[in-house]
Length: 425
Ligand SMILES: Cc1cc2nc3c(=O)[nH]c(=O)nc-3n(C[C@H](O)[C@H](O)[C@H](O)COP(=O)(O)OP(=O)(O)OC[C@H]3O[C@@H](n4cnc5c(N)ncnc54)[C@H](O)[C@@H]3O)c2cc1C
Image (tube, rainbow, N blue to C red):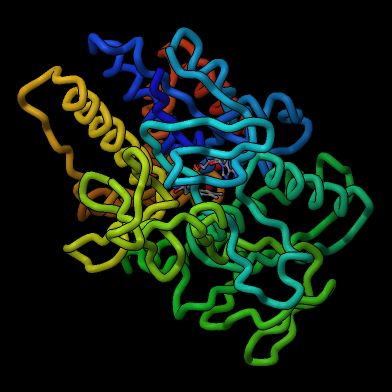
């Protein structure tokens, strides 16, 4: 049996696994290959809804209910599919030997898809990692929700929440925390004013986004009362203060760090070509490139999603680290593996090469309540319409990874919970 091993069950990994499974079962040699997905978590996390999970009142949804809305067990996603899930931590990838070393076992691979995502980057800033909360996983969202809730419950009259990083995660979280205030006060039956501030190192929030989107988002943030500090970089952090490079001191009660991501150490150590931030450079077919031409790379190795870097020739910039890119890349890597299997087994005379074409993906930035700003092609829409569009995009994703009944059930359940959370206006 030859193993097709997928490392990471995020957007790229899940899509690679599902595409491989669908295509492999049509091949005569299907029983010679096994698809194995390895992840340290037993579930796939839907990150676009983490900000909602972090700001949903306890009386609207308990831990279990919230978890079911943003993280989907692999066992259910891959039920009735020929995909084996190994729930373990990956410690080392031996590209020369074709071995993945896990905490509890080893797996040999014939084909490898590296879909390990990225991790929060604290840029070695003094005190930042120790004092800030990240937002990458469901548990991060719960820790943040509980931290805010606890302070309000303890009777804090004023709570200063500072978010480092004014990218889309920082913006959606800041605005939703601000909108949560009224409901939280009712829930704990105490008066607690939440001041929310975003600190952004660039001249504008949402660096890299269309100017029209930025202006609309800024207007909305102003309306709901989120303060923005622009063009200021964090220098160090103490238990109570953030000290900026300009020497200005900002006091905080809760600090969230959404200021950037970096490659996971595992991929950094692989003897593959990487760009300066440690992401794996990939070719058009998403194959990795050995660091040295003499290097013996066992099998065929592909990288997708946040772990990979490919330049968009139109912009000369790396493709942004977004879910849509990871999904498309996961599918393409899977299709190229299938083509290679056909070639190795003489199943077809015509072997195709699927090429990833970087593009400007549409994006949606929720900005508190039932309000979002979206850019689709050249068009920018905002308000309730963009918020509805966000819901449709989410449903579309759920339909792509689970059966229609399950997808609709989870989506409607999420809608019921989050619609109460997302006040209008
Ligand atoms: C809060 C938040 C909100 C976001 N919102 C959006 C949005 O609205 N739209 C959008 O397009 N993008 C959004 N993103 C970005 C999007 O989540 C990423 O671009 C996407 O997840 C990348 O997919 P991936 O498959 O490369 O990696 P991931 O989805 O990060 O998956 C990586 C997987 O690898 C596993 N893993 C990592 N290390 C190990 C190890 N050592 N052993 C075992 N398993 C391991 C992890 O558990 C994880 O399941 C958001 C990100 C965050 C954090």
